[in-house]
Image 1: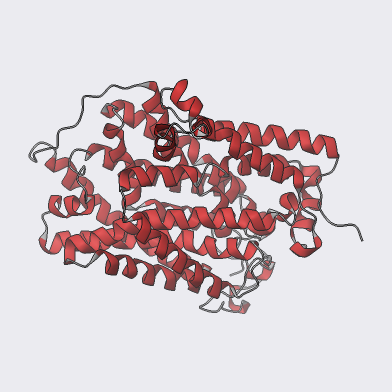
Image 2 (image 1 turned 135 degrees about the vertical axis):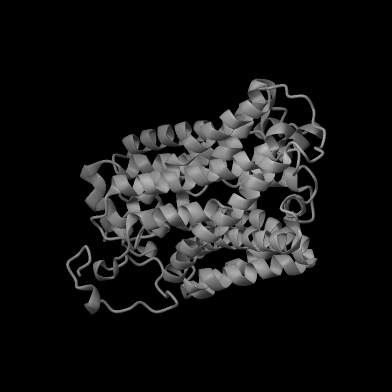
Length: 474
């Protein structure tokens, strides 16, 4: 049997348990795997209580069941496009996102690394809280200890690297999915028999619809900057169409399922500890404990994916340490951020952190597509992507476009943080949601605005400079 580059499988050297490679291109001889494996990884990564919690937000925003469902489907249908498109660049280059970004951002790729790592850490922290709640509900474990247990396991997996991570996610795709099937059945069976928490009558305002669509969009779209990291080991001739479909279905189907589950059980999970509510719905006892363990493992599966990328992103910022060491260090930072998030109002903190930490991804993806799509520039861009960062200039066109996209999208945003700033009467309140509050009725259009502005500014800058390559002249 031979692999896709013609080398007999029996002659391929078995990769080490711990992956030490950083941002260097994956050699063709080490390429392996199938595209549907990537889809399974993304499916498993979305089977997490934090995704369920997004569905619970529907009634809290004043939406009826069907309006919230429509917003969830729309948000994920559009949001999954970003990581699906970005995923197709992994096999072509054999490089992680931050290595490829050098062709566009040059030496400023370090800034992108910091932004991307913060976003990955935010995703980890938002999910880890629910993992701790699951352990507390089933076994009475202290929240601090529960959070620590989440990070101990996810750190081991993410530090080990690509091979162990893929194997873990493959198993979790079945284990955690099985747990959520039981939860889904329990929720449906309990709707007519369990006393439900009273919620305000739905108003179905356009602003609330757009906001929920934006939040669910951000959860799926926020993986875009991580996507090539998990497809770069695939053979170079892997079908881009198949990879796109596998990634799209993996993320889209899992997110819709989780958020629909949260929406359906919204009045049942409206308390301060939704994991305790799920534990009760599944009957408690041994079965409830098993379900809570699957919830915990789902959180670990989600966190390990984000954690692995965060390590690569810190390397992309210019840190010169072995990947496993950097990944372990970032796990400590994520642990501390989780403790902070766990100390406040999770409902408000969750959506604000999710949105504010992912708005930059919109102009980034737009700039990426404009810079990498033209076939005539592909080979040159690929060559520059492999050049050490210290030999590059700052890619000012991409930097300016990214900054413009992020800053100019903020007035169209809708976050609890922006509302709090507005309540103080600060003259800077217009920057954080001014247009959303005054024109959009609380709706959030920051993502589309960010993409449009990023693409437009980058295109104008490149036309003025008549150059897209940031390699320093010798």
